[in-house]
Structure formats: structure tokens, C-alpha cells
Image (cartoon, rainbow, N blue to C red):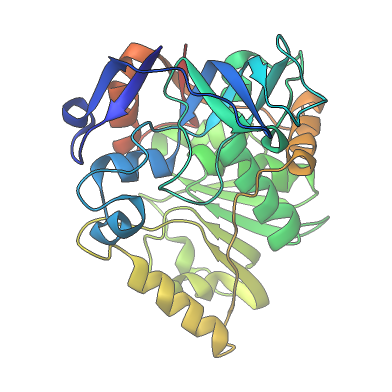
Length: 331
């Protein structure tokens, strides 16, 4: 089969190559899937570039241990493991390989991949391959951040920093669907997009600084981390929740991990309620995500779709940090 293989760290066009590799075999609890669509997510470009340097301790020192990038997928089941009884060849599914680890498993920038059966569900007919293949990591992160970690409900005042990106476009919609009053922060060219997703107020960060608004929001979901945590916390009401969902600048050995550490220290001292969100891929969460998508309350915003042969260009586009919503790779 054809796959995009990463041989080292660096610019996508230099380290990502299309090659022929063997089709992986499904384990007893896995399914082999013919990938019809996948997407580029933050872990993909970070591991491609190998930044920040400390990330290589988990991903691989000289080159990534997992040499095929990609985690989200939508496709057709080609084979099932011995213990899989509720899926069969020919079923259309979507889900993700993501387990939180950068160094194990298979990848989805390929014609075929192997995924645990517990991490896929039937693809709703209403969703296109591209929509389903781009929904999972960003969609589940936004859903869990809003519904579970941020405890968003009717009347909650939510600010989404980085509202036009992958997680941000979902987060604005989930918060609105849950009854919140949503403010989105983005650049000038994305103001109308964010407003169309349900934000009652949109802040153009080139004209206005949300951190100067003292005590205004119950929840700040920060997908950019472009301000020190103590500065961002000014925007929260007493008892408000701050979710830093970014590594900020990835340069250097540590990137912005010290900034995240300071946020957690603030939380331990009781200065602000800082909480983390993790993308947990299981059938229950996938079903909840699918229900929002099928209902029409939430839609997948797709910036651009690339063929598999142009996966390096897709990752390079992600690295510009200017994508509106999701970047799709369709096989």
C-alpha cells in the first residue's frame, strides 16, 4: 500500500515521503480500515517538525518511532480481528487511533491503517468522508472541554481564544449548543466565520485585547496561549475556569511548557481554577459527537482538502497557523 512516511524531523516537504509499505495486520481487538479521509492535527505538525525539543523524548530522539502521521479517520472496514463481533468488512466507520501517545501504533496518512475496534463507530450517512475524517480529535477535545471540563450550561459566559482554528470552530458551536453566551477571539479575516458559528460577540485580536476585560467570563478556553496565564486569568470571574489547550510557541527545548507549568502552579495555590482537557476516544464520546453533527447543531469547518500524495503540503499549511477549521487529506 501507499503511505506517507517520516524519516526524520524538519520541514514537511523534506521529511515526509510517499512510499510503498506492507498493509498492516489487525490484531484480535482491531479492525483494518481502508482510509477514505483523515486530517492534520496539532500532534502531526509538532512531530513532523520535532518541536519543542523535549517532545522527542516521547516521539523518538533521532526520528519518530511512529513514522506515519495522522490519527483521525473515516473509511471502510477491510478486515476484523478475532474478537470483533459488531463490525464486519464493508462497514463504513469513523473514529481515531489517538491514545495520547506520540510513539506507538499506526498512522492514518496511508491507504490502510489498523485501529482498535473500541475507537470507531459507524459513520453517519449524513456526514461526508471528509467531514467524518476531520471531526474527531478537534471535535472531541472541544466537546469534552465544554461539556465535561468547563461544565458549560445555559447562561455560561464562555470565551474561546483561537476561535477560528480546528478546536476553536468546534468549541464555539458546542458552547452555543449547550446554551452559553459565547465570545470568540480571532483575526480580522475570520470574524464573520466565527460569528456564523454562533458567537454572540467576536473580538478581533488586532484591535482589542480580551485580557483587559476584568472578571467577565465563567470559562476561558485558550487554544493559543499567547498571554501569560496570570494575564489571561484577569478575564475570569471569581471561581471561573481556565483551560489552557495549547503549547503556545513551540520553539526551543521546552517551548511554552514552563508557561503551562506556571498555570498549574496558580491552580494549586488557589489563585485560579486551571483544568486540563484530554481527547478521550471511545464509543460513548464518538456517539455524542456524532449526535451533535447529525442534528446540525455543530458542523465541521473544512479549510482545504489535499490528496494523500500532497500530505506534506497539508502539514505545511497547518504550520502556517492560518487554517480556518480543519485540514483534510482524502484518499
